[in-house]
Image (cartoon, rainbow, N blue to C red; front, side):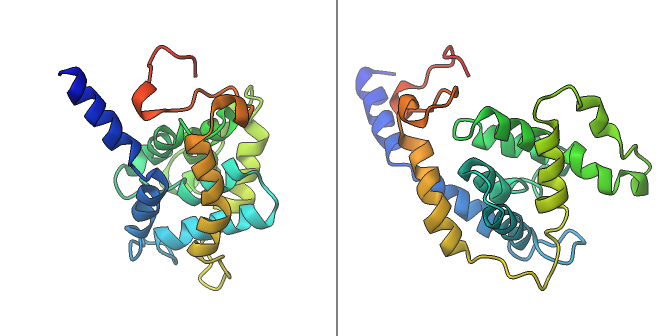
Amino acid sequence: ATQRDIDEMAGEYGKLDIAQNLKQMLDAQAGQFLGQPVDLREHGLQTASRAYRAGESDDIVVAALFHDVTEHLVPRAHGEAAAAILAPYVDEVTHWILSQHEVFQGYYYFDKVGDDPNKRDALKGSPHWELARRFCEEYDQTAFDPSYPSLPIDFLFRENFFSLRILLVSPLSERKTSRYMYKAAAYDRDQPS
């Protein structure tokens, strides 16, 4: 590739609206129930609404909204897939919760499918264990209620996607986190995460 090609590609990457792309992924889950009483889109809205109403951080609310956004694509590794998508934009704690939430959620149903519901106990050495447990117990596990008054997507988009947009474009020093932020033209795999 020539320098001109690279410059053109960087310009195109700079035009990507990551938040809008994520919203489209969530919207694509409308009508996908997978045997649950609410579809995957509503489950994400309920999870995020509960986290927002509980006063969780922007990172946790955004993670709650998208924690199952890949479940219809990779059911048995959807937590890791969602974590990979959001990794450049959320803090380390939130990334860990996303990547492990399937094991924590299993506490509520693994015994019904012939698995050990206490698998999450193998992760008790993590400083994030308690927050992951609470995330599943208070937000994820309870977010299958067809009568729950979820916040509208436009509200969550306005309130938390503003934060997500900041997460996507703010210099690392402004975020005051230890995560290296993706910059379209300056992505470097050797940077610390």
